[in-house]
Image 1 (cartoon, rainbow, N blue to C red):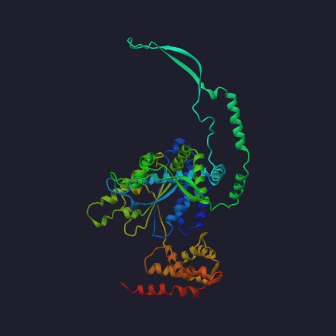
Image 2 (cartoon, helix red, strand yellow; image 1 turned 90 degrees about the horizontal axis):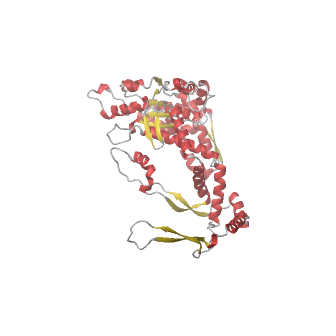
Image 3 (cartoon, rainbow, N blue to C red; image 1 turned 30 degrees about the vertical axis):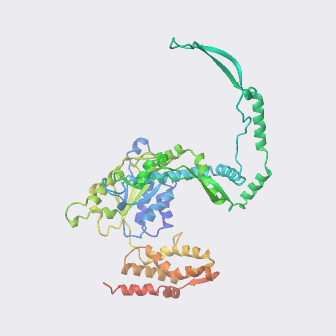
Length: 495
């Protein structure tokens, strides 16, 4: 993260997102400023707040993808939320603080996964022994030395005078002190325990044979019974506006009151290994260390992407009083963006330096319809361009995960090799632009519709015709998409 310059950040985003140069530059600068802030003195660092960004543009032009790729590039905790999910305090629905709890949850999971990777080798060794015990039905039992009641040998007696009621006939009590007869020879017991340990360390030929078969994958389908954790059963009710998600978070620490515990289940060795490795890895990591590291990452490098911000904007031209629900959500979001402390089950989390990226189409409302205080908390505004034919052509060919490359790889798994000619790709881009202009403009998502329609029949028949090599030409495109073109032409005349 330290070594990424703004130019390099834009270059990395270019591998996955076509166009939108201004938006990429804005997020690159915002990210670089966060790195710069961490290098200055602590006194000045606290006063430098992130410059939150408001992205304005139609659906399907890359707003969400820019934020998601940015977080993945820097290994930062990231979540995407929709502003329409939240309601004003006092109404039934999710409260805005839940976005911070969700971000913290993502951060904890990220750090936990990283720490589990460092203990994977040790966890695998432990799980291998556990699986061998289960396969061989071995269970370590304590050695029964003497099942009968121990014989107490007296060592001596002494009297303790009693105090209290002088009328009592008991003036003293003789107490006999002794030890079990079997324990009077400590050296003998230690020798027996040592011999027992030596016996356990002797290699068991059957166990070693099973170990070899387990490592070679010959026992993957063998069924074993293991104990698995059950999720706590929290009653499905709402209390004072709290939703199930909020209640589950609140009651996670007292899950025993609502059930949970262990349950015996049978799994194939392959699945049991995954479950056991996860459990053993969690035992090997320090939970407090995970929580502290996750909280630090969330507070210093966390990113929250708030989509559909235009849906909660109040449109003044309608007249009348303010919409209490939408304006209330804005006022509830405001303190979170300004900087607040949110209580989570992992401890309090400060939002002062979390980067907020808001986005919306703003085709019915305008950014100025947001309350002024919230507008001021998103000082950077970036307008994203609508996509045309040239953009669609680049999306189909240039990105690392281009749609044409995805379908080539998908069908190759069935033994069907497809090859897109340049003319066919050009025609697909042209069709996407035409349909978007005549019908609803859904941006790059239109390409998914067209590609599915183009390859639907081939995807259905692929297992039956493999191996095969099929070129995707202009004629093939016209034949498969003639219905789409016909419906588009007809749509022009329907009011």
